[in-house]
Length: 479
Image (cartoon, rainbow, N blue to C red; front, side):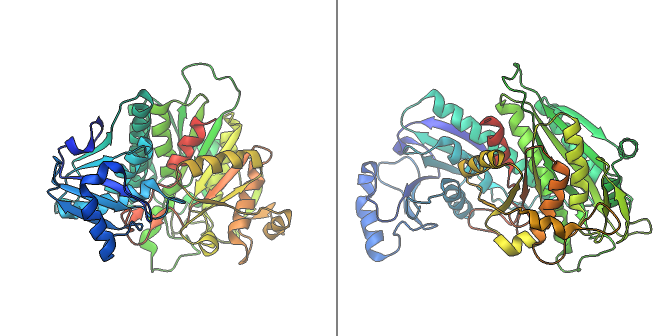
């Protein structure tokens, strides 16, 4: 889809439709005076009141070049989500034959506008052989007056939207088309194109280093594991010694191993690498937006399979930092690969760590599919992450890590167990990671409930959401 910021009055834009946002219980802008009788009739009849997700279309509007004027309901101004509003309108208009859409900014943030357009235009149908014809060809954000900051904001939005869709495209890939090594190849191609440094630790190198936790998960699969490393270094010397490390879980398929999952819904377990996809998407954006600090992305990637060599419940593995883990449940594999990646990130000089992982079903029980669960050992770093998430419209909720929860991980046979029992499962999983983060400022984002949509929403296609790409990028840029 072509995206452009154009400087015209919205009446002069030649498009299939031009959309304008109208809030509930607010008077339409003066620029819409020519359509006031139409809008008054809509409100009087109850057909359109400005509520969220409402759309009304005026065909062949007088005095406009566009074929249609579209009124887009935004609901109340308080709590208004611009990205979702735009994405909702696009997804409603595409099936109606709209190929060229203009969007009147009317003072709105161009960055959020184009992000919403790019994310809303994405479809999860890349393997359908029939041409679905559901894509916009052109999206024009319409501003009355030009300005350098508007241009920069629009470009940032293009980069972020594209990066989020890159992560979604990776997460959409089925496991037969995205093995750990294929994911590594996709990461390498992205890094080369973006001008990032790329490195991959293969199975032999991980064995030499002593990544027993990661290798234990991988041993049941015929597909070898990898630790993907992508590095961004600022062009000028940073004014701080801070080095941000982003760590993403990259399980390309998760059967649960010997502690096997139920068959129902297992096809979705290709999504267990959404954290890794988010890290790679963020690194793609970071390469173009150039924050002032070094940022390194780490994606431990494996398949968790059942086989004659698969890890068993009761096995004890030794992690990279030397601690031993009793594997009570092989389906709690994400935390095992993350701890070796976290330890390696520390060895690589990362001073601050943020990980994203589809880690626990328990976080979905706690927060549903609305908020990502956020855990930390450092309130200052969490504050930065939460501020970045708010700026990018990604909802997160601070979860507890009280010392009492640590007792859930006690093992009679190793330094700690990899699960903590039925209650507080998301918290004990986060505590497990905290044991390996140590004193390094660290935030864990459990995205199990927010990384995937089981059903399409008005603003987004069914499938992966690309959550955390924008938050990670904004975090680095605001450092």
